[in-house]
Amino acid sequence: MITKRAYKYRIYPNREQRNFFAKTFGCVRLFYNMSLDDMIKIYKEKKEYKDITPASYKEQFQFLKEVDSLALSNAQLNRNKAFKAFFRKQNKFPKYKTKRNKQSYSTNNQNGTVYLSEDYKYISLPKIKNVRIKMHRKFKGVIKTVTVSKECDNTYYVSILVEENIEPKSKTNKSVGIDLGIKSYIVDSDSNKINNPKYLSKSLVRLEVEQRKLSHMKKDSKNRDKQRIKVARLHHHIRNQRNDFLHKLSSKYINENQVISLEDLDIKQMEQDSTLSFFVADASWSKFVSMLEYKGKWYGRDIIKVPTFFPSSQVCSCCGYQNKDIKDLSIREWVCPKCGSSHNRDHNASINILNKGLDILKARTLPVSSLTLDSKESLSEKPPLL
Ligand SMILES: [Zn+2]
Image 1 (spheres, rainbow, N blue to C red):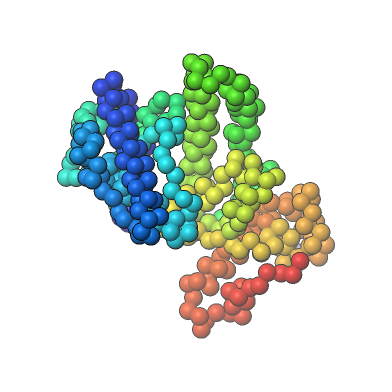
Image 2: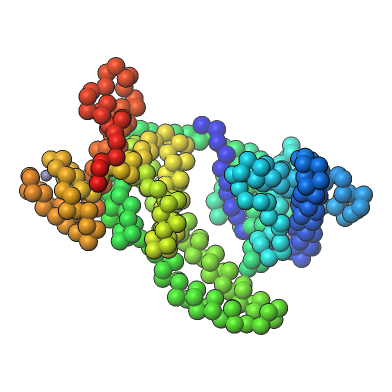
């Protein structure tokens, strides 16, 4: 399968290169804000949408000619996207770029204008050659676009979008059901229990202390600037650890299983619930699920999302009896009153999620005429009345 994949690496620009990047970030910001402003004016006066190009400012601002012109073109594309999303009412009004945000610009590889040195120690971009790069992993494929960014903690990165040919993995017969939770990050139908790393919760105390310090510091002071960097680094560290955990975990499930079944959690809605939001953000389920989905596509695995209204916790995975008492979240272990099987709440749920997922998969792959009554029912299932 031909697909695009992003690789992010830290770069170590020298002083001259840092100046070039600063100038490019500045020009991108200037063009973006100025043209956005002009577009809004035109829209207010004439009620029309006018796409303004970087060229229309180059006479007035000669220095725009000195930076990578693709960076400006990409800013133009992004601005148009933001503007159009706003018109379609999908998004808030486009925001102006500020110096306070992460600084970045994107450029494209045009017939080899972006390349790595033979020893993979340097990357060259349009108008800027041989920037030192640390490539912790290599890729095979064609470079399409590169985004250069400077984080709040003054570190620099490139995100390289590569077109790759990914070979599907050989099929296996194994399937797994996954129950995502707060107490344990995952309990699966193979009885694996993976604890929520809670990186955020562990670092939160420290983060809170550091953030409080920051808020008490005098504006525009040197110390405040130092503290701001410290806080940004801490955030960054937590994010990296979490991404690493999620990548390893999702790859493990993808490597071992042909079918992965999990609940289609309404994560958006959960994130808005204030009591749950911290845990949901910390656990970053939505990120985990999206990793499973795109890796599943790459490697030819089936990721099945089971509807949330399916009462996975309440049903006995041995006999199918629905035990309404289990709605009480504090019950972790229970014995089925009908068949006498003893259950761990989350493990039982994961088995039900697996079985439901396999039903859904079967219904998808069979021609409609050959559906059994049972799988027809599951296709048109209504939420149970609670
Ligand atoms: Zn039972």
